[in-house]
Length: 272
Image: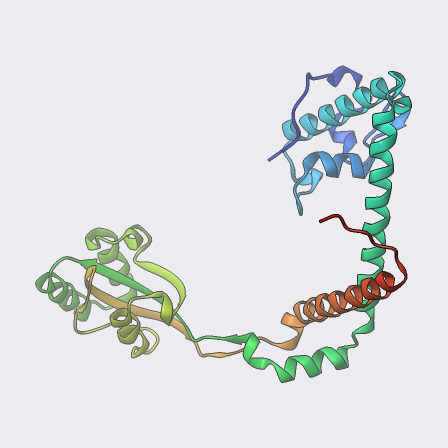
């Protein structure tokens, strides 16, 4: 999980326990350990320090301390006075300036799209947000048609069809889903071979195929647990996606216009 290179542990230099670190990360030679220090060390989007195990929290803090101590040592070494440092620093400043400028432009564009505009875009392009029909089914897969017919007879005679289906799937199915009672979860019709999808789609909730379904894998008995008809994702579910799409397009256009204007007044000499 932690993608930084672990250096030698210096836990003794941490001025607080891991439990305390959840609220106050502490200091190293008077310099605070910040949220940014911890987040950059974890290096995983969406991972919170508080969700880590105590052992992993201690590792993170140890790594932050190591980095701060090494940074102090680097600064004391006089590296800041070298030409290499100064050259790279200037390059980084330019990259940072460009990055912040681009972010600012993007935020301005994102803020310019009202809900009215986003809904207009949503209504014009509903096909982009369509959701295909989905089925939730389970199956029993066997090698021969005779075996499949025999299992169907067992199901026909069972009082609790679903419980019996699950039992047979666990004990008789040769498919990988057998251990889960044949459960295939939710799937689009296109995800399964045509013969399987066609048979499953004809079933009502709770029904199973009364005739074995032959595919390239063998013979299936299929039970339909549920179905979701085709539809369109609601506006709120895709609002952020629409805003991002519009902003990216507008951003590309804005930057193109900006560079075109700058080129007109710039002195550009290219060696070919």
